[in-house]
View (cartoon, each protein chain N blue to C red):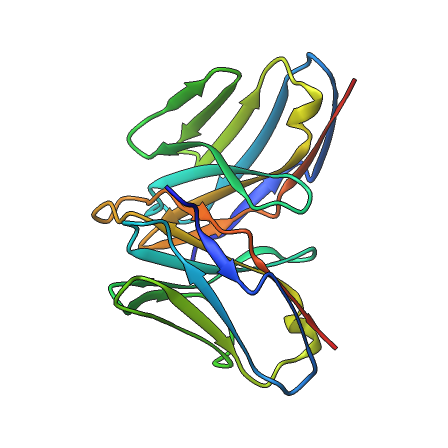
Amino acid sequence: KAGVTQTPRYLIKTRGQQVTLSCSPISGHRSVSWYQQTPGQGLQFLFEYFSETQRNKGNFPGRFSGRQFSNSRSEMNVSTLELGDSALYLCASSIPSGGQGETQYFGPGTRLLVL
Amino acid sequence: GENVEQHPSTLSVQEGDSAVIKCTYSDSASNYFPWYKQELGKRPQLIIDIRSNVGEKKDQRIAVTLNKTAKHFSLHITETQPEDSAVYFCAGGSNYKLTFGKGTLLTVNP
């Protein structure tokens, strides 16, 4: 099976702009989670989607939003970019396991640089 | 919410020695504890995981132990090799959310 894919892989934006990142999960996986990875804060949970519904979210401002489509592909959007949004954005897909913890498989990430 | 603490932040061992990384968690509802290995410039890769109804799990040179009462879990790597050098992350999860530790940079010296 093909792994999790993310596009684009690299992105340079300026402050105030907005950006949309895309994630295609492993075939058959219906849950997609998004994380922000920075050297100082490590991996921080943004949100998780299943069947087009957000089931949980982390402690990020409302500028960070996401959605999931009927084919399980997911997008995240960051509006009004700030310098501190520069990070590696990772998505991970999993097969839901009925409330037990779910094994997550990560994509290669999108590296965002905000100037 | 869940808080996962990971120690040490850096660990240097000689090839062939064992390495141990420890994590603590705060939320007693967490029921899933994976460990990921991330090499420089690459995606995190799952190396082993354990669920709250199990106390120990082994996979060749890697083992994980979980103490639910004390809310801590540990990764043990035996007979370390230079290719084990990477950043290792622990995580605790439930309710469709994983909380990660800050990572441990493991260096295995030949």
